[in-house]
Structure formats: structure tokens, C-alpha cells
Length: 305
Image (cartoon, rainbow, N blue to C red; front, side):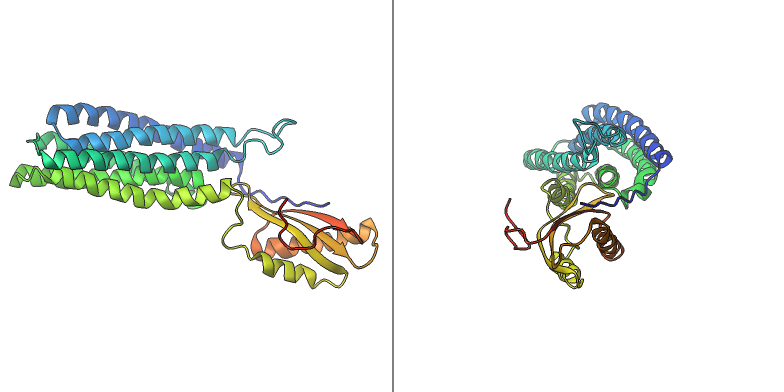
């Protein structure tokens, strides 16, 4: 059996991610408290809905922060993978909360649309501006890491969608102030909610695939099997599993039948070639191969364990 690891993230980079998340948490606590007070005083459902979303941001950022810390913990006898999946689990939780919050907002928006109320628009305008600035700064802090990390992307999406929601609230505040269009408060809340569902669903789907050990979409198992089968000494590749452990690791395990009863040193040479093949072409950086010769077992590529 052989394996190969490739890790790209340094401890200093993880520390920087943790610091940026912590700053974002503090900013969003301040924004949430301000918007709750302002929403109650002004009577704006859009502002309260934005506050609810900001509160979900705080929770999601805390989950992401804890997951980021856990992911650094070393493996142990009881946790042989360590906490490498903590960030994927955080992404799943955060995507779920995005959708749940959105459904609650839709329900409240429909109720308020049927019974629109006069709103103190000046307070709505100023608080939405504060939220835009705070969330905008947080978005800039997390943007780079969001491109390569599902956990950071989930936190980034929470903040980005809330920044956009605050922009919508600002527009609504201006329309209410200058045109008396108080019904726009409910319409904007509904629009914010739909946007949340749209953004959250894709992340929920992707994190679910990882947690369920599904093969990554860009990994062509049959093509990989055919390429390994092309090695002269190999008779058959079967019992294949490919899954994504976390953002940095894609695993491949397989049983390989050899034409001859080769030595261990000969197997190591072939294993090294397989590792190079799947890493360079498919970014698979952890390979486990079970060598076999004349073993009577199922020879299908995919075998139900």
C-alpha cells in the first residue's frame, strides 16, 4: 500500500485567516446591535431583516472561526484524520443557515406587505450606510481566502450578501424618505431572501457532496482507470474510491491486479508512476493502492462495500 501527501497552506496563513475572521465577527456584532435598535425604533422590517441576517453572519463567522482553529489540530489515535473536515462542516452549517434565514424573511415580508407601516427612513438610511461600510471591509478581508477555501467562502458569502442587502435597504430608505413608498420595505426584504437562497444553495450542494464522500465533479474515474490499466505490468484496476477529504486533499484508493508476482521494490516503482500520473493530471494528492496477484475478488471498477 502506498500514499502521497501534498500540503500547500502554512501556519502563518491559517493564523491570518483566523485574525481576519475575528475582526469580521467584532464588526458584525456592532452592526447587528445597531440595526436591531434602529429597526425597533424606526419600525423598518427591512432593517430588522438585515439585522437578522447580520446575526446569522455572526454565528456563521463564529462557526468558521472555530472550524479554522480545529483544522489546525493534529491527528491522534482516536482522530486519525484530525479535524480536517471541520471547515467543510462549517460551510454546510453556514449554507443551511443562509437558506433558513431566507425562508423566515420571506414569511415576514409577505405579512408586512399585506399591512405596510410608516417607517423612520432617516435612521434606516444611516444604519444601512454603517452596515455597508462594515460588511464591505469584512468582505475585503476574506475575499482572497474565499477563492480557495469552502469554509471561508461560506463566511464570505454571508458577508457579501449582507452588504448587498444593506445596499437594498439604503435604496429603500431613500425611496421611503423622498417618495413615501413604504411598501418597498417588504419588497426589498423579499428580494434579499431570494438572493440568499440562490447564493446558499450552491454552497450547500457542494459541501454536502464532500461530506457524503461523492467523487469530485472534475475527476473522471473511468479515464484514470484506463490510464493506469495501460501500464504493461497491470492486469486490472478495480474497487476504486475517489473522494475529497477537505479543501487540500483528494484521495484515491484502488485494488490493482498484477500480471506477475512482482517484488515489493518493483511495486514501489509502479506506485510512484501512478502517484505522479494522478497528481499531475488530476490533483489527487493522496493515493492508497492494494496490490494483488491472482486474488479471487470482485473486479468491477466500482464495488459496493
